[in-house]
Length: 305
Image (cartoon, rainbow, N blue to C red; front, side, top):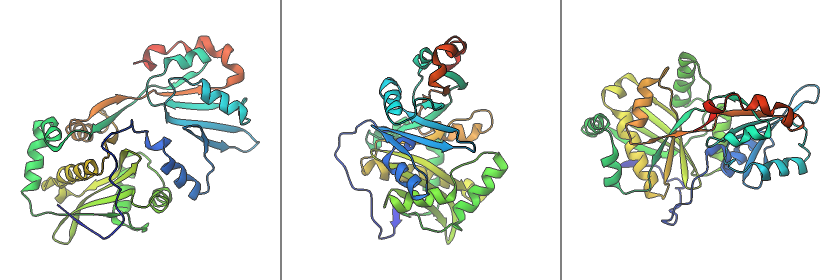
């Protein structure tokens, strides 16, 4: 259904699907960071971000990593000179056992919407919520042209401009544009821009970043006219089917915020995506672990599954 430019595509992979890793723990993300002058540290399969503040204070951050067993990571940090460095840990799943190490809860767990693409087309369609299915049918009946291409290296692209305005209005921050462009540049074919046009006017766009057997819904925008045409619904559906054909088996639709963005939350979950509880954010300073352990246990219920 897409009009596609002659660009490198994602290679089709084997039908078996290893458990995808979060974008923030992928080699693709590490390459983008390094291209922007940052120096991430890969310790085994875990990506560690490093920050140095004035006065020599260092901080290590681990975002959306598998910390079911944090011992190997902590040992690797010690071996690499981080034994006395404060750590910010944001596990992929609830990790109450971090409190036994003296990690202190900082932010309670959020939820992400994860869309399983491993089934066939009929299974994905059957999982759609009825209202989402109705909007999809409406969008398919419109005279929309869908396109797919690698993300152009253009800081002035209309999607970036629309997203910047949206961030200001809604009070959130996304990646810097330079980092997004670096991801596309360093990972050829892994930053796909999907757009819907009515005539020559772009009415919706979605930028999806792929990483291994997973992908992440990175930036999206729909105009007022696009909403009337259900363009976003149609575009996301066709993009998901294209990803599935390339053996991408999981699409991370991002965090769910039912208080400030209830409509977007309903849109994401209407795909049949399931709520995935993350592990929250913990602070750990290894030299004080035993001292802080009693404090760390105070919020176990809020940080748990």
